[in-house]
Amino acid sequence: MPGANKSDIKLDMRSDSLCLSAPRGEDAEYSTCFMLSHEVEPEKTEARYENGLLRIFSPIKGWRKTK
Image: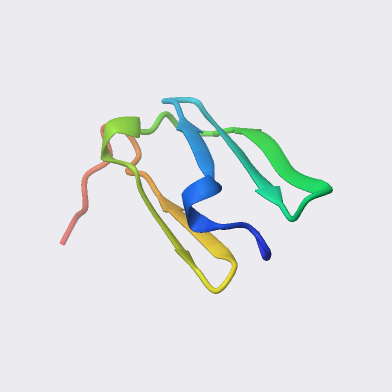
């Protein structure tokens, strides 16, 4: 999302989808929605925005790490 300010990014995370939007400059806007293939836990979602790259981490519901 190059050109977007971190404070302007809106992330709507749901258990089966996510939507993103952010203004980019004065005449453009990022806007997208995705359906997820697995149900996630939206309340545990973490997002990081660095150097124009937005990374979203959300655990899959019911998934447990194995050793």
